[in-house]
Length: 101
Image (cartoon, rainbow, N blue to C red; front, side, top):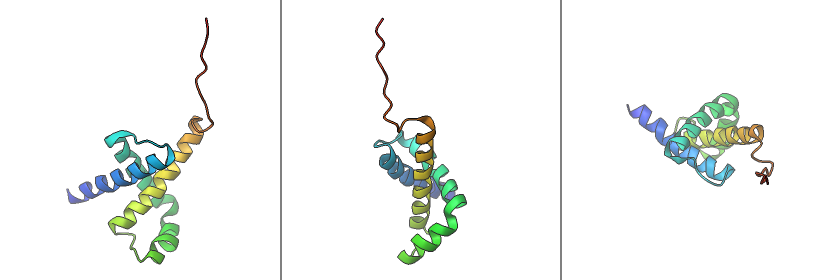
């Protein structure tokens, strides 16, 4: 039960920070938690060793610490949101045209 609570807390913090950085607004409590947890998976799978070696180690943080987990999840969530934004086309200054009948 404690591990689940820590995962939700890490997901919430990382998802909140990443969503505000990438899109300028959050996705709500549940949305930020999902973004953060998926970001943790993406961050650990793709960049786990690089983040630990070049970001956490110079700061004196262990990868297993809560701060280290938040940093890994944040970087993964930013990557995830940036890729989703590129794929969806939301980052290209798109706007809805008004149709006149």
